[in-house]
Length: 339
Image (cartoon, rainbow, N blue to C red):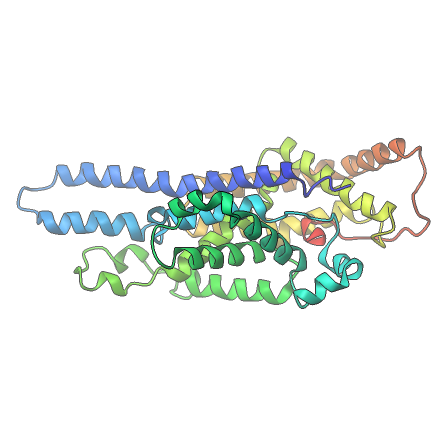
């Protein structure tokens, strides 16, 4: 009955996260090639040491250190793979009702996400993966840093936690918006002396961007081709219907699904895609994701009601035409309602 939060979803999220990571690295490589060509054509009297310093600074600062941080890259892709391990096909509020001991264990906060983290770390730190870990954790502190990165980005996928989302918005504001519209990030490091560069802090920007990678990848289907969006939208509908049919959800997902998707685009997907563009590290992927989100919303407005009717008809045909329960109520559709 877990039609959406399956291993196929984990694979899709992982590939989407890897794509965004690659965009960070490849964007940086392209920019550096242009920079090198420019420097070759510069005057012979240029300070070669300063140019080399600028190259290294560009490599690090233009992607907030992410392109130079393989551990962070691995942690993000690993998090994408494991973020929904043992998902039960119901949101946290229902999971707490069904498994109160599990809820108490995590103080009723991000229960499914914390459970996935526990299972993933338990598997990853088994003795048979010792050689793999020795390759990944090359220096002191790498293991604890990996754990913290994993926890941060997986917990971030609990988008129904209003308190956590408020903190995420504040971090984004602090990292990218508090400097004002005329702020030029490149001026912070370019042509700075070597002794000043270590004092430029990229940690907040890097943390926020890593979170955005996993958040965007978790709902990547909404920012990809229309057919991909509809495919995963139907799977989410089927998962929520299965929960309703088995008495694990109070509301029939059909009512409100069409309008709920529009609200999800407006309130979450489009702002998220806009952040991918604004943070400036994903090259043309920011424009691609935002453009697809806007087109999918427009097409959903046009075709969504008929699509929802077909979703419902297929479910009813499969269940021999009857409603599984007499209690039908409206619901708001979004991936948020399943987390």
